[in-house]
Length: 115
Image (cartoon, rainbow, N blue to C red; front, side):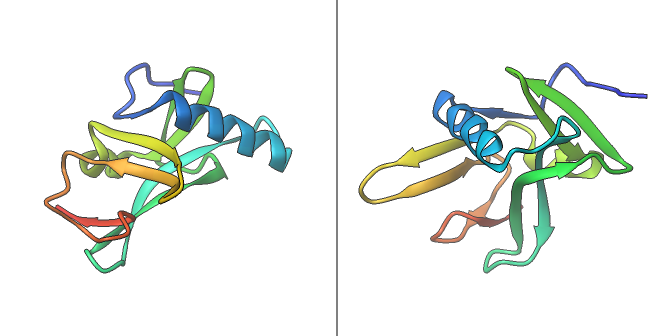
C-alpha cells in the first residue's frame, strides 16, 4: 500500500527541482524510484547528508514535492525538519547545498553537520 504524506519536512528551491528532474531523466529510472533524502553517520562534522535516487524501503515515508517523489526514513525527519535543498551553478560552486536550521555546526564543504 502506497502512503504519501502531504507535508514534507524538507523543501527544494526551483533550481534544485529543475536539476533533480534533469538528473532523473538522464538516468532513465523507473517509476518505482524516488529521491532519497536522509542522513548517515560520518563526515568531519558528524553526519552526512544523503541525496540520491533509490527505491522505497521499510520504514520510509513518501512525499510528493511538485511532482518529485521524495523518500525519507521516518527517523531522519528529526534531523532534517525545515531543511531547504538548493542547487548552485556558479563559477565558485556547483552542486546541491543544504540549508538545515537544525545543524549546530557544519563543515566547510557543507555536506556534513552536527546537531
